[in-house]
Length: 168
Image 1 (cartoon, rainbow, N blue to C red):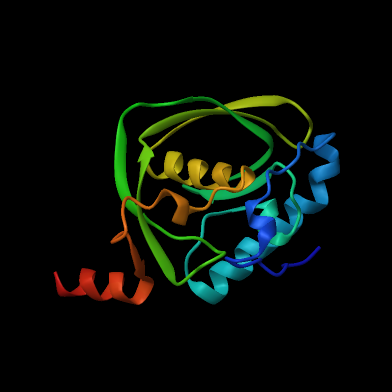
Image 2: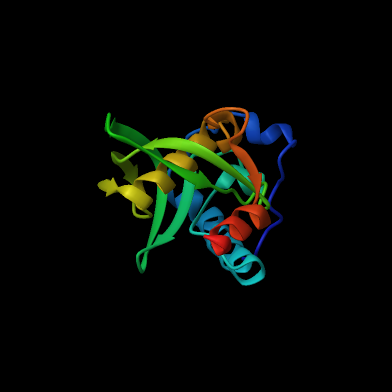
């Protein structure tokens, strides 16, 4: 397969709720495209850990993540739990790569999903992995990081955040 165009903020498809996949085998080509698109984005932008199918124009409940040296092809993921303990961070998104959003996420989460052979698996994630799962799951429900901004001062351009970090 191949890297695909990532749809950008303003495209109404990003606001749609993604539909479940009938069988994990039906998601195989999408997962390959997601992996290839993630790798191309990393090559051209220098960051990136996960992507949802809707971001390449496929409104299905499919996510591909690479974090901590492991890859996670997630089909039909669903929440089991989100912790009450929260933390705040600057979040970014492939669909608006130069914009950062200060938001709050649960510190821990548990997610159930189907893998490529159809078996159901569970992930317990904390901190950066939990944040990433929440970000990608939001995409499947038509929710964007900008919707979760803490307040009107919680948006900044990536270059400005990097400039601030360098001056401290």
